[in-house]
Amino acid sequence: MALGNINDIATFVAVSKAGGYTAATAQTGLTRSAIGKSIVRLEERLHVRLFNRTPRSFSLTDDGRAFYARCLLILEELEEAESMMATRSEAHTGLLRISLPLVLGQLYVMPIVERFLQQWPELRTEVAFSDRLVDLIDEGFDVALRIGEPKYDSSLISKTIASEAMLTCAAPAYLAAAGPIATPDDLHAHQCLFFASAGRSLPWAFQRDEQKISFSKAARLQADSADVLCRAAVNGMGIVHLPAYLMREAIATGQLHVLLPDYQTARHPIRIVYPVRKHLSPKVRLFIDFLAGAWQRAPL
Image (cartoon, rainbow, N blue to C red; front, side, top):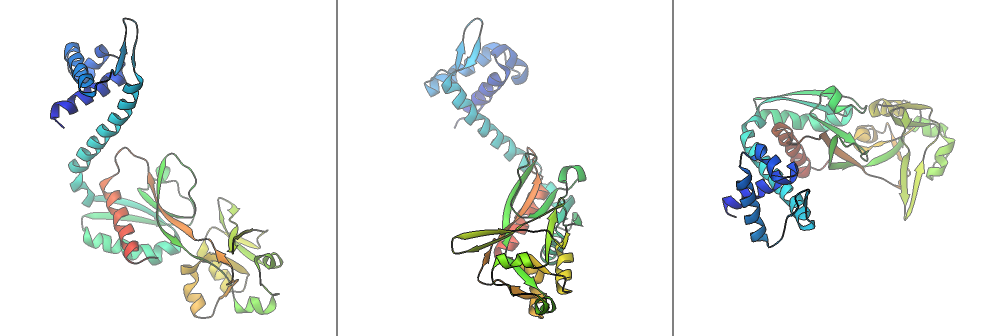
């Protein structure tokens, strides 16, 4: 595509936004006559009329509206490419503020963060560990890791980079004193410890064949810390439904036993979340790609 073609497209977009040739002169720095010639050249190349022009009105034609939508995307891509190259060196410097779930962050993300910092020595990171749902914008975080299905938020972008398997477990001492547990329905007769988000306990999901089962009840203990619930289960407080990675050691040492092996449990997506911005910060993009690449090579 010739350079003049891009200039004509940029002029067309400016005219469309401004609502007329005269109004577009301030934005483009062109005379009204030069703008008119640019639009005529564009219409001749496309073999369509882009504007409806009368002495009292000025509007896009149907073809003009369709072309305008595509041109906006093209110009935004060009602007982003220019911005990316202009700020490329900034990717390796500055402070990156990260919010991580407590146990997942400590066990599986921090080793990657350490390698990230070793590779980019001029970058600094501030890491906050919490199982609560932090407000990235109000609390000033660049990026966060979240577990579970996304809830719509127009201010955030969410990208799934891994998933976690869920297990239902209890301590041998609890099971010795409790009744049988053969199906999820049996859980109603037991002490269940639920993870809570924003004060609401999250139901447990099971599946056998094509049957999907959602289980919830009044919890003997609910908490917004998966680690706290795991320790309570080890101490015989009741049954938990938590990520497998969190209970792996307790299962291996016999402190917890896996229940309901004939029932599949839903895998929860692990998502990286960051605020919507016209141009993604290079250091944020660098970290997202680094973390996703690490987990792609060694799945969680």
